[in-house]
Length: 535
Image (cartoon, rainbow, N blue to C red; front, side):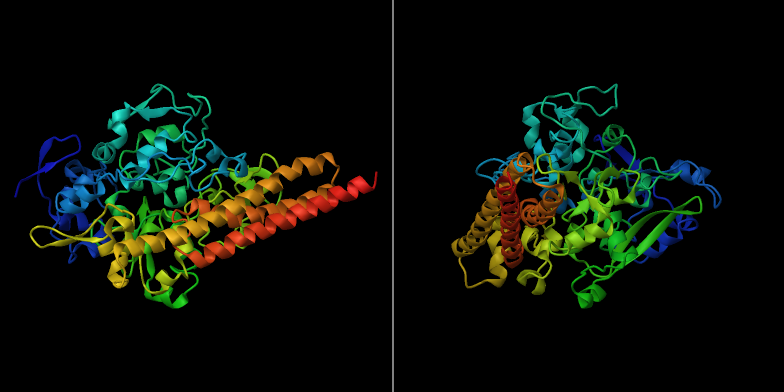
């Protein structure tokens, strides 16, 4: 049978099916996944141009490597509704609103994070269709090198999904150095950052980003060159195995935490971890282990989303055993999932002797937290009740022909109350559900602002203490308290629900932050008073 398929770029090219048995001769692991699965009738050539590979390959050598599709449109041939929902733009969101603005989540963020690249720009999230292109243009990442072709492209969800470089331009295509093209920018991006934005490089990246003869890219690669090689956000195969259609994860840091370090899928619930398990499957190149995927025993959108919505290291940093900024991208600590909640994080960071940055005013070595939605959700009332991310953010939709599919628009439940909150809380109206959401988020935001006030007071006191001659021993005690106050505050500015995913933990953590700041302030004020009295 000869079929036509819309290849990237819009060209129609005929597909000539191959005999899968020929492929299975070498790819036994793929046979186990593909044959007898939901995708058993999907021929290899749908995703792989393997014609020359079949002619040149043998059991002993790869031959000419197949061209493998990574674009989302490969799946859209059959899963059209899911694809169309993914490229939808939620125009009701507030694009490129920085968290540090007075009316946003964290009005004192820049002061509290001083010394870290996120102070240059840290915006609220928007539709997943833009997750790769928004990373390329953010002021903290590439020094302003990458920009939109023009401002009309900022709402082009389809273009951003079909290919990042159809909507973006490079200020200097002839160079690959990380340097500033615009004022008030930073060059903080690195290859690990990009692993939760896209997996276009999945076949060219060894496990954990280690250097490997068969890997085109690694943690230490030139990030500008790496970025130019990437096109598509949130590939379908990040969550769905293309050979079997089974649920899976591909993010190596998550597989390392769950399987290699034996922390389990739900570290605080061994029974749930046993029920929802992950099997690590490793693929070889040249007779050596190369890359791995994690097959899930049961579809679990919490784990699928945890490939990105999680706290992890994705940068160089400080070795806390020496106090030196000596952890480079060649160190696996620069690609590390802590897989800990806010109350366990400090111990987990101490185990690997890691801190992200040194605060510009206090000199404290601090963490820089990333979107820890999964760990926040652990132990919440919703998680305990069996609710998962997709239940609230990827509702079921019925098509005109009666078929039901899962929306891949990843929206706030406010957009689909009938398919989210009101499925369980059927005694509420939509207005009541919105009121409850606002009640929780407003209360948490109030605690965030209070935490920021007291952290700012602490930070402002450090120069005063130094001028007064307070000893380094006392300053170090205050820096330790600054770490705690910062951790218990920033978790909730990095996490994107403003406390809704776990209101109880949010209150406990943020009030702990206030307590720690006040304790440090008293410590420094007492030391300052003692210095003044001794003169």
